[in-house]
Image 1 (tube, rainbow, N blue to C red):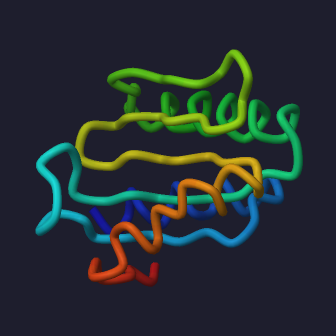
Image 2 (image 1 turned 135 degrees about the horizontal axis):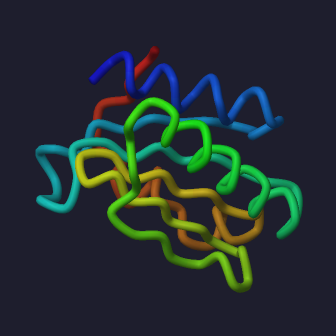
Length: 110
C-alpha cells in the first residue's frame, strides 16, 4: 500500500498539486482505508490533476472504481476502493474540511 500511496503523491506533486495530505481512515469509515487530499488552483488544474492521475495509474494496472465531480471540478473524487483521492479547489477544500472531519485519523507520510 505504501508504494501505491507514494506513487499517487508523486504524480500529484509532479503536476503542481498543493498541500497533499494522506489520512489513514480505516478506523473511521468502511468506504476506504486511505484518503489522499490535494488542492488545485482552478477547475482546469483540478481536471488536469485527475486526468493525469487516472492515466498514469492505469499504466500501473490501477483502474478507478468510479469518478465523481469532473463536470464542475470543484471537488473531484477518484475512487480506487481502498484509496480515495479528493482533488479540491482551495475554497471547496476549506468548506468541506475533510482534515477536520477525520481529525483523529493518522496522517501517513510517504
